[in-house]
Each structure stands twice: as structure tokens, then as C-alpha cells.
Image (cartoon, rainbow, N blue to C red):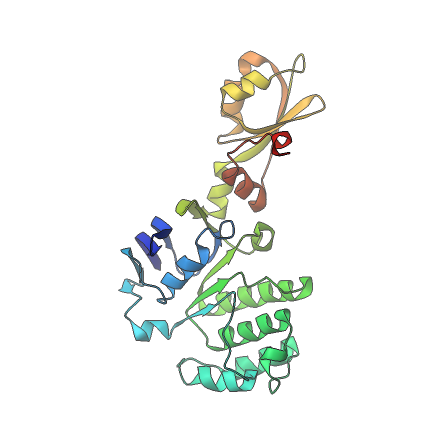
Length: 298
């Protein structure tokens, strides 16, 4: 289990993260979500033991990460801007990593090189961004980590490669029970992949929960009222993101359909329907709390 307890991180006078606490159980794929600059990379680097938190602590399997060299050899962070040796090739990087990671699998390395159809002898600096990303992922999986941290790892990959990466992640986790934590600002990439989500907002944890619980937490509804107007009733129950659509209203609400019907009973709703929200819709609903009059911008 990855345990993050009251963690804060500053860089000089800048506070990157403040009082973050949550746990990721073994065998989960956790999506670490937030806008660009929210602190996702900083948190991943603290989990990886690259950064030391100013406050709080991070443990993996009950063991503090930062000063534990043997634990670091069982985890791997695929960074958004991966480092490769100057003039390095995949083959030279494989030799480099195989000396550091005791579980290195040359078989997995060869299989993935063939799968992604990369030249292992070519200089990685000559690869496209997408090919460099693939090279980093080949090395990441070949280290056979027990804990795999992935920072925006879908960025730069075309659709087919993104789907292939998802399949590889599922297969690896299924066989090895690995913890995978993947950061992204794009919830569409994580839909159907992650079973646990942590959202970082304004340097703090907004919430962390399973995908199933998150979908129970907030639901999208559509309702029609006798007479066509029920905006005040919806505002009265603190409905969010209310939109008019012909003779009905679409909105999100933190509660069940039965409770909603009871709360709206006095307004005589004609009908109420609900549908599950996508991860992207939940994320946007969670993050959007400011209302702007765009006309005043110009």
C-alpha cells in the first residue's frame, strides 16, 4: 500500500502541495488528476523518493520511501520529460537500467522493443516525441517494478499506441499485482482504466476514492416541471451546473433519485431521469466553481 500522510512541499516561498493525505491499496490503478500545475508531478516525485516532503510522510508497505534505496529499486517513475543518457540508445539505456534494477527482464525488454517497432541501436535523441515516450515505457516495464508511477504517459502517443499502452498496463497489473499511479489532466484517457481516482485542486486534495464510489457521489439528472419553470427549486436544493434544454433542466446533484424526488415534490416534477457521469464530467463538475461573465473580458 502507498500511504500519503499530511504531506506538504514547498520550493522556496512557493507552496506546491499542502496537507495531502490518502492511501492507494495494492493492485490498484490510481489516476492522479488535476489541471496543469496542480502539483501532480511533485507528488509523484515524492512518492518515488526523488523529493523529500517538508511535512508529513510517504510510506510504501509501511516503509518510508525517501531514504530507502532498496525500496526505490522496486519502483519506477516514467517521467513526463524522460531522461536518457547523452547519445544514448535503447540498448545502452537497457544496459544502464539492468545494473540498477534487480528484477530487470531482458525478455520483456526485447518483447516490447519488437512490439513498438523501435530500433534499439538508434540514438533516442533522434526519435520523435512519441517514440521517446515509447522508449521510456519500454524501459519502465522492463524494470519489472512493484510500483509504477507514470507522469502524463499518454501525452505524445497516437490513438493506437495509447490503446496498446492501456492493454500492457492491464496485463502487467493482472500478472504482478502492481500498484500503478498515472497522472493526467485528461480524464478521457483514464476512463475505463483506473479504479481509483485522486483529484488535486489548489494545492490540496479535493478527494480520493474508488471510481464506483465517485460515481455514486455525484449524478447527472434531467427533470421537467409542470409549467416548464423550476429553476428556483433546483437552486434551492443546491443543484450544480444547471442548464435549460427545451422544456427540461440538466444538472448535477450529490444525492440519490428518491431523495431528489422528495426534495422537488412541491414543484410537481413531471419526470426525473438520471444517468452516470463520465470521469471527465465529474472532474469538470468538481473543478468548476467560478462563474464568469465572458462579455466583460473585452
